[in-house]
Length: 423
Picture 1: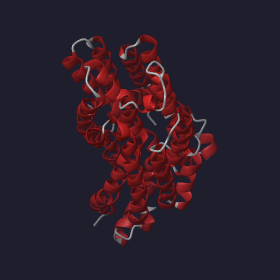
Picture 2: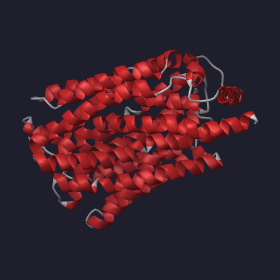
Picture 3: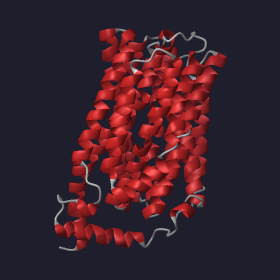
Picture 4: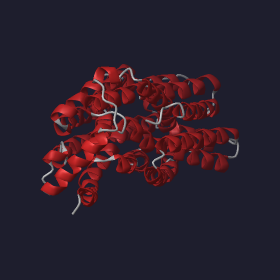
């Protein structure tokens, strides 16, 4: 059997062994990241003594402090993963953020929320960039966007679970103490996820006893051939590479829209539809269902055609146009909500095709550092998105202007994507 055939036969093993575990971990990760959005809609900050007029700004700042901490560890945690493997680093990260999430359920002041959200960002920092680099060690160029999509599909699907969990908890306990139980349950889940990852994941292909010797050798040969096409620079020089900088800008713009959308999704639905937190939580499922299906289909198309850059541009346009039309029709709830849900196709689908570009561009420490930098800078959009939407809501009394701004960021992200060189 040729080594190419062996690579093909190992693909299903790699998918089955790695992706379900990573998928589960990302669900846990995203639940702990955005559970504050449901707590905000349930009146968390009013219970902490914040006036209704100030909630938008205070909540946006609390959400955004997560990304200040998130920026800090990523380059060096990725370098650590390249040297020591993913299991130990993920175990420490999951245990830390599980404890922090549980502690958030006990807060009695806004300042405590600020501190814990900042610490949560530091604890979660190694995860996403770490997985993007980890997948580049296990999946070849024709497989990468699809592998990314099976992982990143956890974002919209976690939205489904998050909405269901929040809706059930609020229905059972009420808004208060429901939002406290939300943090407690999801923090315990994070601790369980970290322990599970340590025992199930495999650090490097050379350690995969679940592959045959021939399959491991064939996979190593295929990666060696692919390395020839990659840029060879030190990790410090990779951080100043023009493509890496452009990729960071694109990701920043895309993430700004994504977190403006994710953090304020239940509140926007409550505002437009004039419904309570429980109904808004359940309605929030719809955009996530649409996104979870489209994300995988779009990634598979991009892998078949090997046009990840153009597909990324196209889905950004879908997001921008959908958001703008949703804002323009906000007086007609059903139509506005449908367009808002369609925008989720672009809001979430860009992630899988986008990451296939830097994964195939550099190798070794250079890839680890560049992916860490792109994710660190890009996720600062998690500061900008919630703050911009929250500030505009506080200033204008409406979410419409914030939706328009998210649309603008999505379209700009698409335009910058076209500036990235093909190789």
